[in-house]
Amino acid sequence: MRACIQLHSSSKGNAIPKLNWQGGLLEQAYERCGTVTSEYAKTFYLGTQLMTPAQSKAVWAIYVWCRRTDELVDGPNADRITPQALDRWEERLESLFEGRPYDELDAALTDTVAQFPIHIQPFRDMIEGMRMDLVKTRYQTFDELYEYCYRVAGTVALMTMPVMGVNPKFTGQMEKVYGAALALGVANQLTNILRDVGEDADQRNRIYVPLEDLEMFNISEKEVLAGMQRPDGSVDPRWTAFMKFQIDRAQTFFAEAESGVDLLSDKARWPVWSALILYRQILDAIERNNYDNFSRRAYVPKWRKFASLPVALGHALLPVRP
Image 1 (tube, rainbow, N blue to C red):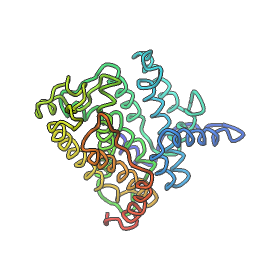
Image 2: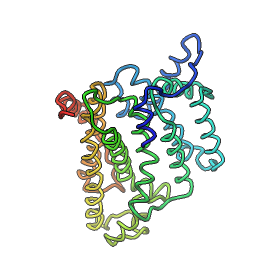
Image 3: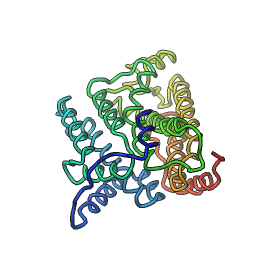
Image 4: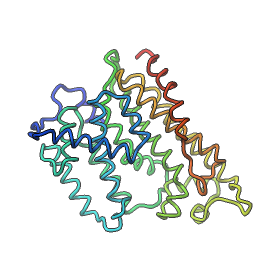
């Protein structure tokens, strides 16, 4: 995080040669990134519509790179992905940060990191997270899980912070802003994990929730893989208590994230508040489903998403003084 802050705070940025793409090809690359984002991350894309055009395009380019990275280990060809394939992907990353993109989607990101002081390290760290997914299907402690959450989601916060920008009235330490952004990324990933427990166990033989936490609530791996439901279809009370504990932990990260949203630039506050509120509603949906994340998927209906936008706008327009 420190390297990201140093680059963000400097006036130099990334020394990348300007791409010499003719005939609107670069703009087409950004448009394609926007199309991919809108197709695969509808809630996230909704938030980008509240940003400036330059911010939106940059965030689309970052999202598409992250999605392509994730698809390597979770996509249709995941069974054929090797550590060597991730090595080659990292070489492509280094090249695009040097101004030598491989394709048009890489070019959009090259142009983005030429415009904004975005450090390469979070991108490298995300690839490390993919390497974890190749070999690791269980997490013994929360510290282990936190490392994974940082690599696959906290990194996105560090990538996008220079795009969001900081309130010019803020004179404090940048660590506070970046720390809150990192907390939001981790909170979002913890929420994803809780929402997808049943799917990950049934389809991928993965259990992301810490095994030490399961042991604390007297729950075995075998029970999670089988689904924590009693013969009458109700959720096992041990799982209900376990999920309440996990949701409380995720909420602490959302609370930390809240402390930093008002420190962002004017144009960034509304979309980030929107994303925070929308993701928190997934936890609410898990609770409404009586903590059954094996046979029921927690989702936020479209009407509830739109209803939350005025709430987010209110927070954005009335920020706490930096």
